[in-house]
Length: 153
Image 1 (cartoon, rainbow, N blue to C red):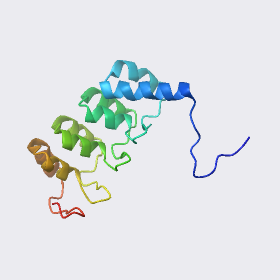
Image 2 (cartoon, rainbow, N blue to C red):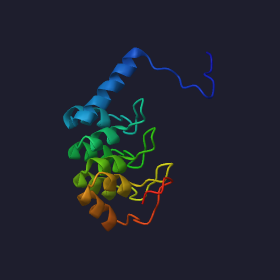
Image 3 (cartoon, rainbow, N blue to C red):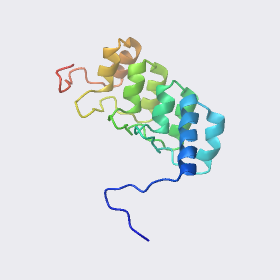
Image 4 (tube, one colour):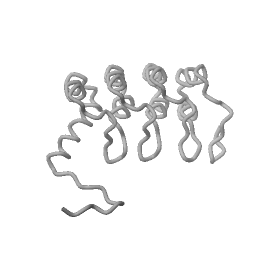
């Protein structure tokens, strides 16, 4: 059997890709009933789509509190960033969902996690005037003095 090159990922068959797409869509829709069984059977909660978005990122970003909690209860990593190095908390800060931000923080999300260019969730909330999320992040230790590479504070 040929060994894949170290820098190449093995390719998935069409059936596996279709199943993965269904799982990502269930998270995006917040369909907790349909996704609970695979999680209970051992589905790795940190699988990611072609953009690096985890099931948790998709559920949280789309405002699904119950799905966010369930994924975290099954071991989803609240710090797992996508290919743009955005964490679920940064995505939620952008969207302005303080309830989901609170859930993520309760499960260990770092309020000062930075993207490669130095942005933290507080900056995403501030960019879009998400004051409730800003207050929540600050009350949990977000550092308002951090500056991004572009000088944003």
